[in-house]
Image 1 (tube, rainbow, N blue to C red):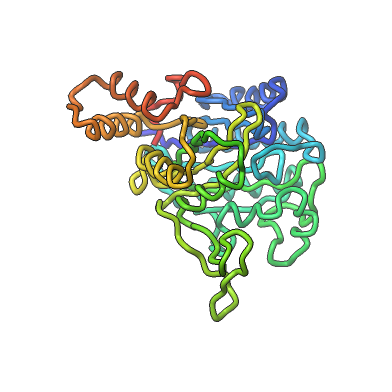
Image 2 (cartoon, rainbow, N blue to C red):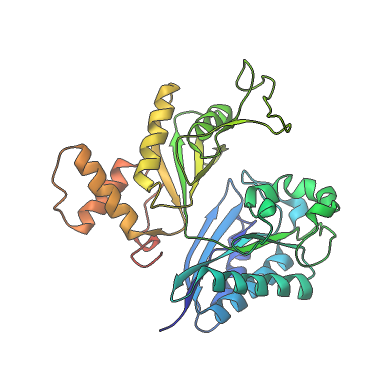
Length: 346
């Protein structure tokens, strides 16, 4: 039985389709690797690419794509809504079949070492590939983003795991690791306010918000006895979220990563954002998937919404998917591509 891993690199280019094509051509040139999805975003100026195959072939394809991205993308000229620190911003490996997370993490380390030594790009390990848990969280590693990394990389505690401790002005730095499957999911709001979107994001994300005296936005931060900021947890476990404004759509969104869909499924995240938005006088108008999603997530969502309507769920899979798409407005910003729904994604 073949070992299969998925790779979902995020490249800091979402507008020039010719550049994106040159990067994905590198992936498709590796025999045994299947390119599953390419999802560019203009406002984020970022493309999420998904491919799958046996480990050796996947890390070869990832290496070639990272190399090509470094040749084509100039980070000194990059701007976009999404946090970023490099031409290949992040490159996770995900175990799919007949392979453990520990084995997948070892392949991530091999890829990271090769990128650091052969391409001279600073590389940070994250999630299961990172032994130091104080720097295994992607948002912590990426804090300061591209602009702040010229100084950050010089701090001893932020020396890269591989590659030079010198920030590359053109290519930036890259984060490589091994993680569980996640769903990247954005919820659309009837507002253009990033501040209001962030307030809802803080309401729902597991990390919550910093505790403050008086004013929840500008009040003095409350700290514990060690001087660490106290926080108020959000309502959804295994969810990361931020608010942003997407100019091409003219709306603010809650951008979420659902990192464990057994704990917080897609439909629960959607309903909770609706609830928190309503409490702030804001309406959810629809939502958007980024990349692939397991078929089971939409089937579960369809059954959930039928149950809320006190209707029988004894309908076809096609009908369950249709109900999920319409209820969550997954086609509001454009048609949902059925190829993005896979029965064997996770």
